[in-house]
Length: 115
Image (cartoon, rainbow, N blue to C red; front, top):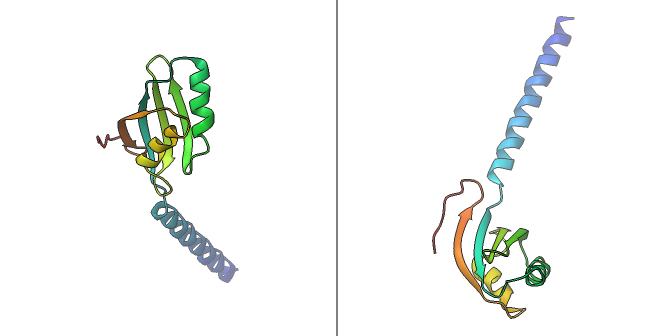
């Protein structure tokens, strides 16, 4: 009876160790997710907004896109391991829009990395 209890304790301790090790690996492998804001002067109506969202959503590494037509701002969440600000900005040129870089932040800590 005592041996079964000892075996259960060892199994639980071993499982706890595995969980901690797995969580450590996941923390190390966390992706570098960033958010960049562009000003797009050509975006002045809902049709322009649809053009921007439809044509940029296939850019490599893009996770999310949101727009504010009134301010002519486009906010893009992307994986920095797969793309960068210059590539995303060049993506607007594919449909003859110009994107002016405003700011970039890291999604985790929300600190600005100005130009």
